[in-house]
Image (tube, rainbow, N blue to C red; front, side, top):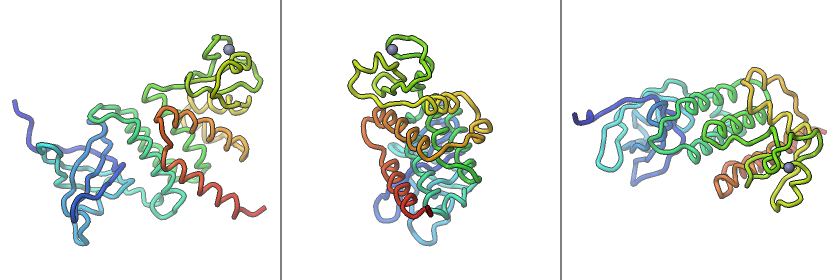
Length: 259
Ligand SMILES: [Zn+2]
């Protein structure tokens, strides 16, 4: 039986690029079709009916018509526009960082329903009060779980001995933690404090309710952000654009913070 000409799906808009005079190609993350692309005709015209329902960081119900190369978006209705994330530069940057990582790690047309759920969960947490750095670290560790790069945090990735409560090292190339002895033989590793390892383990294996009770000082927060970003950059083999942008904003916040 031939596939029907049109289909509908829930979708989260994770990327948009301009096409021609007034069109866009959108990248959508969907619950059952994985990552897909669609052309939105005329959305850059001021009176487009579709435009408001196809903004970045929007959860929508979308109808598409199959095309020879790209499918065309023929209808869209917003489910949640996540408005708080669009009215604050820092929150917008956090949300774009999340969508960029989803875009880079997700495969086209491969269903990953838990990853779709994680994406929506993270957007809701970003809208609520609380430490956004903690939300991002929680996202990163759970993303790594979902896409098959869960780092080894319980035993040394080289000699397999249990990790002692001392400063160990994180090795992106090994995908986990090295004990101090094994570290000496590895070129690219990053020191990992006892507290940072504890927090990483908690982030990796707990739900957000548990994680949200954590209190991190700035030093620990920076250490975790650094270690995880080294690992993500190694996996993606290039710098994550929005991560660099987040670093700039963090630096500005530090300079303007009182005290
Ligand atoms: Zn070892």
